[in-house]
Amino acid sequence: MKKVFLSAITALLLFSCQNDQSESAGSETSALSRRACATQDVLEAQLKADPTLAIRMNQIEAFTNEQLIKGFSGRLVNGKIEIPVVVNVLYKTTAQNISNAQIQSQIDVLNKDFNALNSDFNSVPALFSGVKANVGITFVLDQVIRKSTTKTSWGTNDAMKKTAQGGIAPTSPTTKLNLWSCAIGGGILGYAQFPGGASSTDGVVIDSKYFGVSGSANAPYNLGRTGTHEVGHWMNLRHIWGDATCGSDLVSDTPTHNTANYGVPAYPHYSTCSGTPVEMTMNYMDYTDDAGMYMFSNGQKSRMAAIFVSGGPRAAFGI
Image (cartoon, rainbow, N blue to C red; front, side, top):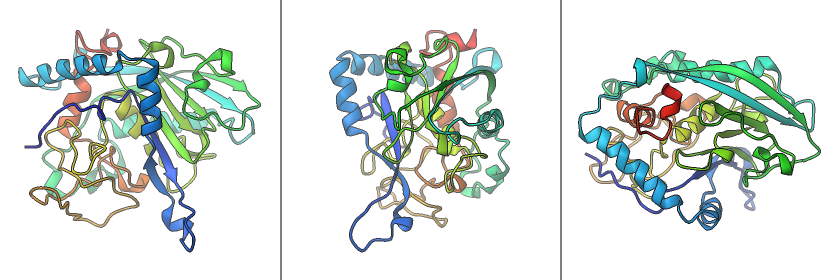
């Protein structure tokens, strides 16, 4: 069983996920266009701004482990969680002012992916069929808020969430999931705030080019899986490789990965970590193309469910 622990690196408030397009001499940029992560600057900025962050994250981790150790089955509050979603659209161009249909397509993807209704769920290999999960969380579009801006890009310093910086403040963040659609810049697909962060910046940011499955959504990230991946972070999931070589994602039923996987890896893809397990490259918390990710595990389901029980950091969503 994978060793589960909390380290300074996994005690992150923010994961920043980006489409890394290397410009090395002689390289094929199309072949190198891929998801990647640039977490260090974000980590340092968050720890500097909030020295209590690591303490809060450790407390949440201890609470989660307590739920699992005492036999917590993963049943959600009232058996089901229905999460109202507020979508905040910041746009400079017509393409960035994504349509209501494109917004709804992202909500639809979340509902399919978190309820094992995605058409590719049956593609999960037999090796992982015993741990593939129906998370049982649904999402309902609550409202769409739009705002025109002169900004070309917003970066990852949460400016899009702050009215004073031209953004849109979150609506009822303790009881509603706020999504921001905007031009993030730097090739970044999106980022999310973990449980434990300030409510004034809580939620998920997705670049308008990777939001939903229609309109401005760009391949190979045009199936709404950036949203699924980032909402997974918002629900306290780590990257499956633990952001370290052969690291831990704090989940016991996911194989240990060497590092992130990209594109659509051929199955089986073996890890060179201890035990040389077959990697779960089709997990939403890896870095494959949208077409390459299509499952959560039961361990991830239990980890997500723990945040909604009484005493959990998102318990208000279950009331």
